[in-house]
Image (cartoon, rainbow, N blue to C red):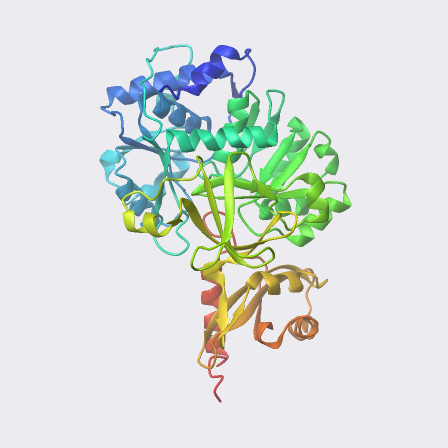
Length: 507
């Protein structure tokens, strides 16, 4: 089957801006995108790249990422976008594990590839040489190959928060199904435009935002690196129809000096995903007449569920219901459905779900039950079928034999007027195994913040759920996918406990 959909898009679309790069001052039509990809496919073939070979790109948001994807689809190669925020050891692991034949890179990220074999580091996408290869003025037509729907189309690696990154496999069918599901769910059409600030190595930005818009024939504005003030400037200039951002990015826009809600006048919906919502941010947008809605997905199943603007007003913390062509269950430890209102593990099923992990058959096997992918997220469903994420299973704190959901404690702390942001983690305890602690970013300095927060939560939570220790930070450290870095925070808490002899709770 031919999965070369950018060629079909270019045949059917009028000549208009498909991709605009304000940073480079360039814009490309759908016809340009197709020619650039055909030129690159010919070039890759000249370098000895064959069907099934893995080709990587290590770059911020740039049209070259789309060039590489569409060229790979044309020739049956495997597209590998690499997370440039990973640590050097993780980057080396990704490139080694994937078996990549060539790596294209952005000039300012070359330093991060120091440990990679020189023969793999191929070309700078910001160079005149690359521009000449893909230049639409010099078209080298390419005859697209037929592929099987279950052939490997792409590898996207997890962020590596609990170990080295794992390669999530996408077949042509799973990759394209997600794009179609998303475009249908959001009702995207050719009149839409959006700005992509989330990194294009991340499924939230690439699979759920950029590609559905391109498939629908809209206009994509590239934001090379996220910056709240810069994004506000782009909002003022382009006034897009919708945005998909990580919650911390919406926060970055709000606190920038140039934030202006008038730039949102064309916005039809604002989606947040990739991390836990920030209640203060949601309330701020709500006060200005805009509702943030929660989308849910993960690398292994890019978009599985999303709320609606109307429902989000009533249930702001819900992720809504499954998108088109996706099924879900909430199951217990034996993979049986739990009752409505009970907490269990969220499991999803659909053509957009990964078939498994690259070179890890055992990991793959234990990640599925009855054809459903086990997400590792604890969730509950209400009587109307709306789903609420409670916590990651791995983040559950077990203190003295009692289970504590960090999200429950975070929700209570977030209601206190002193708290701008909070993350609750467990730390090692001789007496309880683990104890509860909270990292907080305050709205204003207060030397007695910990006693005030302690008094507040004691009135609202059971004793074993109350944080035994607080840590005040100016900002929450983020991991490579812009989520709170819980491993780093846990390490800080263990160090603080040791310094204060908090671990000696038997005394």
